[in-house]
Length: 162
Image 1: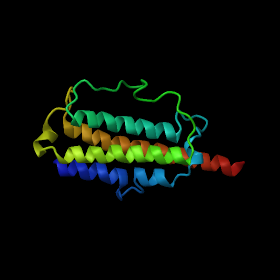
Image 2: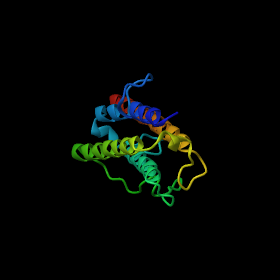
Image 3: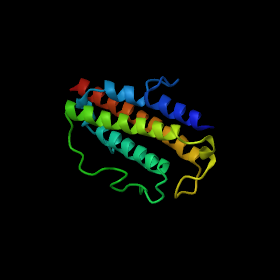
Image 4: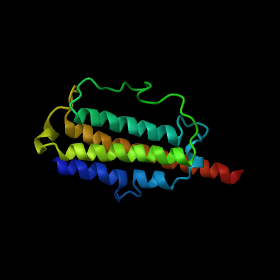
């Protein structure tokens, strides 16, 4: 894995054409805002909460790319899952998507500036490699894409029954 591979993998999962279906960003763009605010029975988070969570973990990777050894996110903390997320309207959804896209683009730009040797170095302040972190970032997007699609499907099914 080199830096170009890292960028390609991150970008494909985010807004490319992965083999498994629509990418994260394309999926989020197409889901009407009315579905973003609902949390089906048995689910822990809404689509809005998931998107903010994805943004926050992209910021974690950005901070590591900037060599910030002190930046961290504790699992199940307010940095991991933002508290008190309010319902969003179309304008707010558009702003959230703009923030998500901007964070993604910043990530790719910072990666472009890294030498290939960076991939095998340890992540700043962590005990794993940068390649491991990048693979994790890709997996994180795909994992939450699955959750987003599941929530959307559950909410659509529920609305059709009513």
